[in-house]
Image 1 (cartoon, one colour):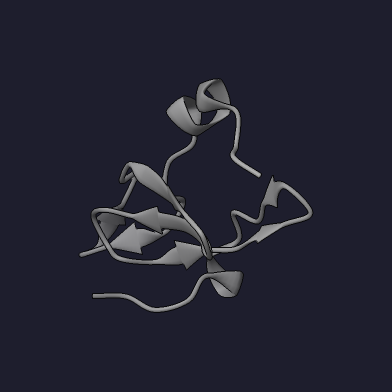
Image 2 (cartoon, rainbow, N blue to C red; image 1 turned 45 degrees about the vertical axis):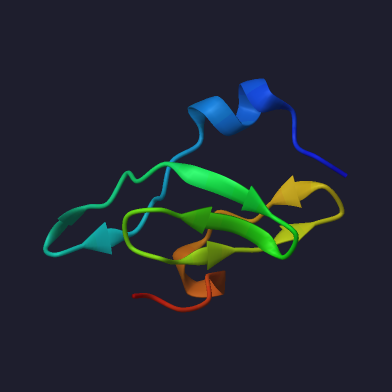
Length: 60
C-alpha cells in the first residue's frame, strides 16, 4: 500500500548526520522509507511510517 504523496512530501529524516540534523528526503520503498542523505531505512507498519531513529535500519 502506497503512502499518501502529501504525507511523504512533509516527512523527513529525524536522525542526526555528521553532527547536524539530517532532514533528508525520504523515498518510499517496498521495505520502508529510505533517507537519501544518511541511508537509514524507516519501517512502515500497517501503513504507518515508524519515524523513530532507534527503529531505523542501516546507514551509509
